[in-house]
Image (cartoon, rainbow, N blue to C red; front, side):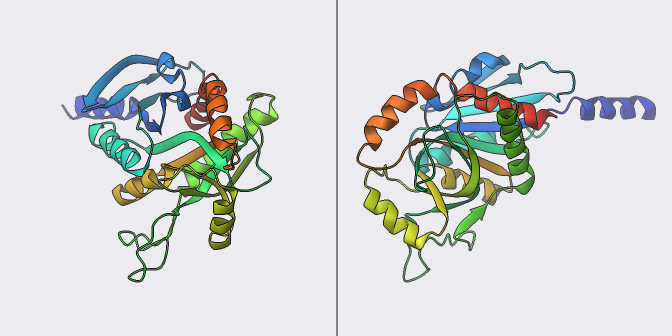
Amino acid sequence: MTCILFLHMLHTKTMRYIHIALISAMPEEIGNTLNHLDNVTSKKFGDLEVYSGKWAEKTNNSQPIFVSLAWSGWGKVSAARAATRLLSNSSKENPIDCIFFTGVAGAVDSNLKQWDVVLADKVVQYDMDARPLFKRFHIPALNLDRLSSSEEWKEKTYSAIFNAKNDGLLEEFGSITKGLIGTGDRFISDRNVLVELSKDLDGLKAVEMEGAAVAQVASQEGIPWVIIRVISDEANSDAAQNFSEFLELYKENSWYLLNTILLGISK
C-alpha cells in the first residue's frame, strides 16, 4: 500500500502543469491564442468568460503548460475583477503560478516607438491620490507606491523575447526594454499630461489602463505577476487614430509574442 501511494504521489507530481493566467483588456491583444490550446473549456461569470486549456506547442524539452485566459475590458476595475476571477477559478491541485497581463500601451519615453516591447520591472497607479492622508501614488493596502514584479518570472520573460529577437524571430516587434509602467483610468492623448507625469514619476516608460490593478490583486494574493506592453502610440493628439490602426495589425501578431514567452517559460 505504501509503495502504491508513493507511485501515485510521484505520478501526480510529474503531471503537475505550469499554470499561467493570461489577461488582456481586449481580445485583439491575445489574438488567436485560443486556437493554440487543446481541450479548451470555458466558464462564464456574468459578462466575463474565462477559458482554460493546455498549450498545444510540442517541443522535446518543454514542460506542459496550462493556460487560463480572459479579456477583461478596459480600466482598473475590470482588470482587477478578471484577475480575481481567474485566481478563484483555479483548482487546488493546479493553482496559478503567475499572472501575465499583456497588451498595448502609449509611449512616455520619447525613445520608444511603435512595436517596441516594454516589460515592467515596476508599476504605479498614477491616478492614485489620497492626499493629505497618504502621499500621492501610495497604495495603503500594501504600504507601497510602486509594485515590483517577480524577478524570476520577469527574467524568464525578458530572456525569451530577447533570445527570439537575436535569433531573427518576432520580426514585427521592435526593441525590448524594462522599466516603470503607469496605470490610470484615462486614455491619454495629450503630450502635456505626460510631461507632467514624467516630472513626478522618474523613469516612466509607458502608460496604460490595467496593469497596476492586476499587479495589486496578484501582490495581495501572493501570486507572481508580469506586465508586458507593446507600444501602439505616443500618447499625443494622434493617439486615438494610431491606436485603432495599430490594433488591427497587432491582433495578427500578438500570438507570436505570447508563444515565444510560453516557450521560454517551458524550458
